[in-house]
Image 1 (cartoon, rainbow, N blue to C red):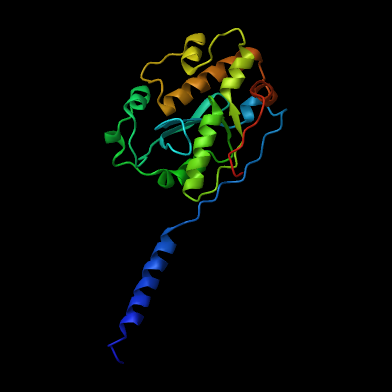
Image 2: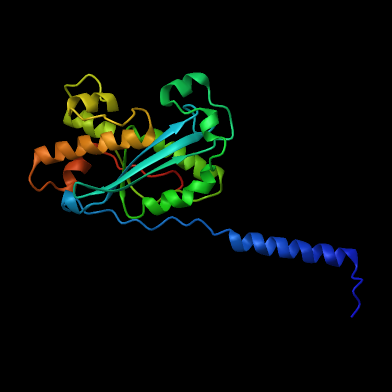
Length: 235
């Protein structure tokens, strides 16, 4: 056999080997199907994921996510929680760092959004999502997914800010800090304006209110209070 193959044949073969290896390692990201619970479903039988994002700023088009925190709950029990610190591959303004206390040094060796996104989708599989001021988080997740050529989640999202404005119209403010004070939630070992801890605060507040409202509350009580069901852009 002639071992002196033409250079262009060797180059093509090398390219095909590298391309095949890359294709084998890259698994397409496919969001799980989502089925919305009926309004009459008992609250205890619905799985929720309360999530929050921390970012480099306020613009989904120009800024990036630096942290995603999520807490999965069902029937008053915490099933799990996850925190993903994310390298935004850009500078974080000092005034933003002062809000969430996440510095570039903390993120320099962290994965990118594209790296953590499949794990996030797996964590929220089948759950109704809740976020405080949900349009902000929904727009950022949608923008990051689109930017990385990945499909958005299929899950429905409820806005807990609207929910608490409906439940407590007499309050002047409905921030997460206000909920902590209203429900006398212990903050021992937790930090406000960090994604996972803020998600826990929202969960504790919703659970306390639902326990107060009825012995066997229905999902409809949450739907009516939250109003519009949000969806991720592109879904």
